[in-house]
Image (cartoon, rainbow, N blue to C red; front, top):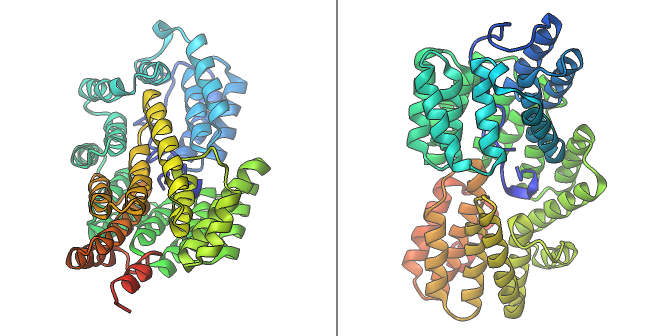
Length: 448
């Protein structure tokens, strides 16, 4: 499991959201608590979080804090699990409380590492987190926890080679570290090496047969590849292991939407919402976006145009912005595309000023559609192609990467560059021949 961008199902959980900060089993010398009962509850929370069972982890960390309210590591890990469950408000509150009440001098060395990283994140100094983790890894060469985190951070930075290096370092210390195989699976997925990715995820399944997440990770790989039935089978296996593993319900909703199965998508999203307790407004927004992607997958232009009218007009990035732009493109509504591009550019700039990454490829897709509608087809193709080349095939980028490639095909065809358009379409088909826009591109180029 990793957070994705499709259908806000996905606004999706930080990448590899449960990779642990810790290494060995906690003992009183590892953590500052003197309560054996609190330590036991913390260990249960730790084990649940490592399996990505964050709702269960939340309960255990809260139990630890009820026994020792000053247990710093438990509060920080509670915040991590809340954030991984998309409970961002409570996560920020718990992080702030942990930092306000902690005396760094009273913390153990391991807790001081957690304190330092939490401080940097809270202060918006995300660029300093990676160097800090490198220093901690150097100072603690026998502890795999920091190399795990470095691998996770490198993936989020798009530095797949560095991520692979740190995952391999972890395996040198912990030969059968399940999470490192999960990490390597996502690295190879990002590189487009799907056979290698599948092998790593299957190794993860072998090492951790009693966990849901290995099957969820395989399901995400098969989703990128367009192997819808295999994806659904793996995701349902995850839910057989843990019926409350809400990420797999979210991912089932995504697969159903990409297959054009609206009823299946909405039911899976509803099941996830019941587990997480998402409010009705958020659930309605998620449902509308799922319906939009279902219409796109079916080639139902009128349906997508109608759904786009229901989407929030002030949402100009992410899935909502994409669907609104595609609908405007279907209608040939140049004014709407220009307005959306302008608003998306301002929103992307604002997001980047607050340290957020990722909106520029979405803006590129919107601008490419605008340029094509203005008659600048070749420039539109160049914008889409450049943005696509900067993305990888990790689950949180693959859908957008393939949509950009489809836009490039349409723009190249409009510019009369049919040979180049055929080459880009072949590249899409090599990854995911079942992707929603593939049939439209085939028809556009006279291939049926």
